Length: 165
Image (cartoon, rainbow, N blue to C red; front, side, top):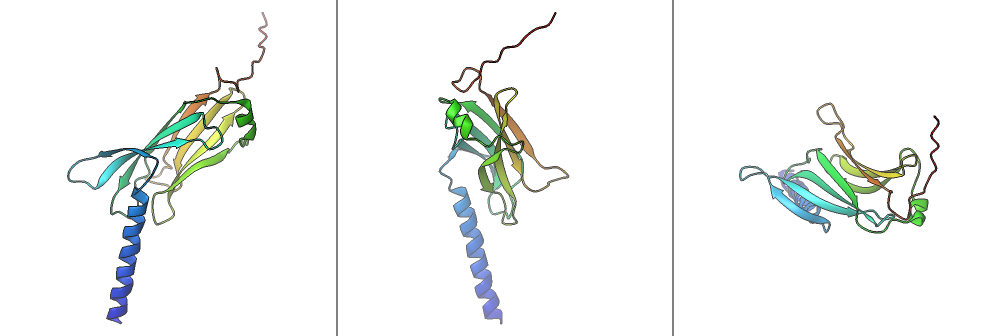
């Protein structure tokens, strides 16, 4: 019985280690800032190019706690136009009020993840990118918002505004 516990324990530790090694090897990581010599937490900086609107690039910062079963939920996001945005691209996106998930990253072996959702604000002709954690932490769902206006792009539609005196 003790031998089985040791074998299963070893397998569990190997799987957990593999999870963290795999999770830390990200091809979209562009920066890694240590939070100090006596902590195992780092700020990871990742880049995301929108798969349907490749003229938008988002940069995300989030904390990763090495050798922990769960990373903190705090994150920030900043998105900018880095290329051409066309009306054909905008025609392909989900225009519902909840938008669509364009990025997802596991933050825990306990089903917590960080997601980035694109939502289209048709009235203001703006793409909104919402970064959020899927589990409540300290009484709050952590989130961050960035916007990319279509003004000045091929996707912007001129509208006439009438002013009444």
